[in-house]
Image (tube, rainbow, N blue to C red; front, side, top):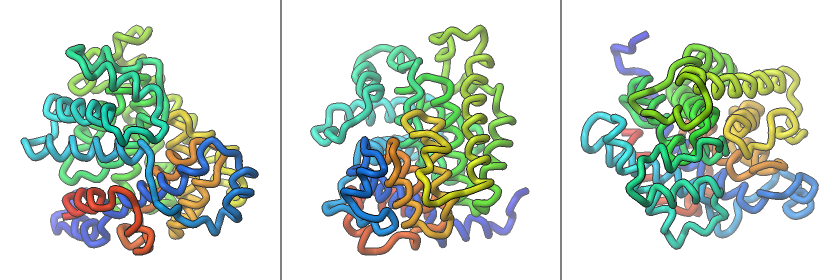
Length: 346
């Protein structure tokens, strides 16, 4: 339904959903950085009760936030030149990923898939050849939140951009579908969707798009896999994401906030599990943003990626007011996060 009065857009700008999502993403990343690769008993022994976890000093982020900012800058460059379109986004995105690859600050335990793909992107080869077609790691969707925050995109632009940014490094169809769903979740929450209905809306979206291959955005990527048709290729990804959303729905029917969410929805090292477990953490405490981050950081899995996505969901839902000033003021890359958030909130 159209909103001729513009009230929905006004409410979104007032709550500053883009600022909230970007800051929340970085805060979750910083909170989960020290707990990554640790099991829950080790985390509790080192940091105390999970509900009391403090933001580290200094509040240093990982490659998750760095690559989110790379994507955000690429989108800003592309939209400064006109409507967001495949060729207009691909060039700056490729350049930003290569710059990240060579940066001296790229020392935060980045994922192997991103490193291999970005090294190959630093060449003349088509990006489809650089893409790691067998990888569905969470690096595909840990960085996609900006796609859900940019105003004025059509559903097709949002889906195509989300899948393209994933595909430059992670070419597996599940990486593409999970990135599309992650951006969709951020978009819906920023626009005021109630958390209670979010999983249902994401499942409907997955079914509606299950056989849609975005040729204009992805080109011949599907031919690098073993599938007979592009539809067969992308359906594999959506089916794995639908299975992850089903596990999430089952977990939320009988929620246990004190139990590690990874036990129900996965450890988050792969894209569909990162989405499901981050949503799990958020939907346990949709009105308690710091509890969301703390729960996500105290998990046995890829805690920084789970917490950064959970922070993006909480920030998109509640806006910039979700985060205490004393936390926001200490986060690494604060100035750039706030600048990009203000741009899209405007």
